[in-house]
Length: 553
Image: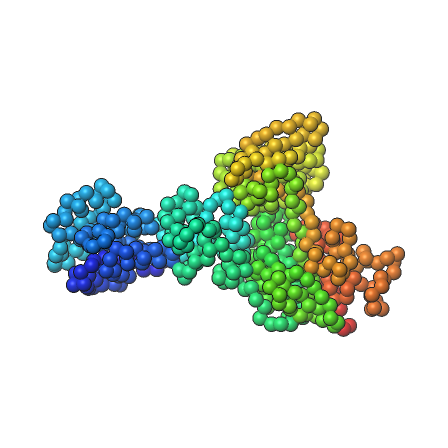
């Protein structure tokens, strides 16, 4: 923790210098001494300290000052630092005001001027107050703080982005924390715009876009070179696997992702069937380990960069980013995975981010302690999410269209869900409407066999309802099926013949698309086995195929 601050305020220059001199003589080794000539000047300093989350231990303030008295200053300052110890400097005529302040603002002490000698009249009092402050003050969070409201989609996006990129942050809810609201209002005069992000250096971001936030949080958002041997688009398990093997085998490798490393798997609360981890591991832990490994081996990783197009200019391939820049390479791997499909029911779009979330949304789970939440979906990701939410929620209801979970879920998850008392499974059931003004309040469900309709209170709804491929960046460049999944290897041959435009004398490699040098791996590929281990394996195989491709060009 940085040195705690002692603030002294007095409008008389001689007195101000004297108190600063005495404070520095006794406390400069352990505290930072800051002086101000008025209450307004001191309040500006307090606001700046709060924006940086610097600790303020003591406010030593003269009572009789023009424009703003010491008591009036303390009333406003303790909104930002309620734990700071409060001391008034008073003349004999001000003692009644000081005594009244004990009840009015919780004044800790008042000192008569002059305080000479300080060894008898000043230091013993302040030493006691500071010792007490150390015993009770919470250690300030030394990092990024995000201020906003729980039901704001924009606030959820920022929290989710930071969490998925393993960037520590502190959440400040302005609806329940008066100091946080005051901090937001002082940081951004005028209508409140959320979220407000306070960085460790004291700077403030208001409604930041994710790329700006990533850069200011210390994540890499720009490539260091214009050209690479191997560019991987998508940082899920397939992309991370390819980055590890590509970098370790000497390819100049660049990995980029729109959001964070880990992809959909990175949001899984617990992966129990991944080889070598008998107790399981979270998707975030797997992503973090793989990210560190890839970087250590030499891969470059860009965050908050969306690839929007791929073009071919033989013998090179180019990836165009959303900011208009292009990155050239010798070979490309598309490992962009899939996204959860949107639920087409009234109210869903309006309440997304305000009680309705796509995927696990692990950052929000703790906000629903002892409440009733719903999970829609019957595959492994839905089961993992339900088990995770059951640690916090009083009840988790799984809404499943099928007759049972066994239709599409691994048996080990089916068994765990059956053994969890606060999870119920509603089969043959659909969500047909979501209700609520500013946030989700209830769901309307319909039983597909009986036609029965019921409306139930709901604190949150987490959706896992199938997936659509992220393949638009290669639309018109490589062959895809009618659903948008990329065709690779033998899948795109027509009656066993190579299609027009394939000019090589060989057949395509296993994970190669209809354009030589462009490969696909993971869930974005037609026929992929949707398991984390399979995706990692495909990423590794893709690197071997890239080597074979590069030998021939």
